[in-house]
Image (cartoon, rainbow, N blue to C red):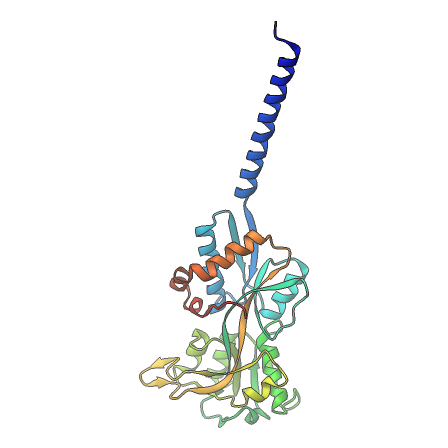
Length: 291
């Protein structure tokens, strides 16, 4: 007959083994439990959206439990609002867009250049020449609209001085080509396919914005920059020379409640898997650490 004390000890030992096993299973499950994230990335045809998709693919390649769904949005302003509302987990946002206290910076991705495109034969040579003209602007929710009015304010141009029409970049390119508008404004990285399609056939040209340092005095997120010679064609070069303009960083922002391990995984991909990202999107080569 088994002594009662021995029987009790055996039952306690079995219970401890079961508890340890349960904890191990729970920990293993938590580590492998899928993490589903939603990322806002602007227009589906944009280079920004392409970079977001690259981040999603490479993150899942190295962290299979993390799945990022990239969704098209109207742009940075809407992304900031959707982050605050909890409808997005991470998003790309221009640095000149206000965000809520619950939003954090993960990494600067690349710079958008302010690109003013004028119709061939329009005679527009400076931002001030837009007075009295028809100008195609990005739609509401796109940070490019905010950027345009920041520059216009510096040059003393108001909504009463121009005839502004909002449309998508593709529609604006066609409007410029057909002569329906005199100019368009885009906040896009140099070499953007949207801009290339607009000016490569001679329908338009880029107008320099040469007072970026002065604009920065009122809008600190704006920096002096340039559109390099040959950005849109190498021979003959287009543009023919480096063009001064203003630039603003495109940032990857996340909600503060993102689990630290998930944020760490995404950050690791951004900085240690740069070559893999660049194979999918050239813009990945411009990612830098926050300062």
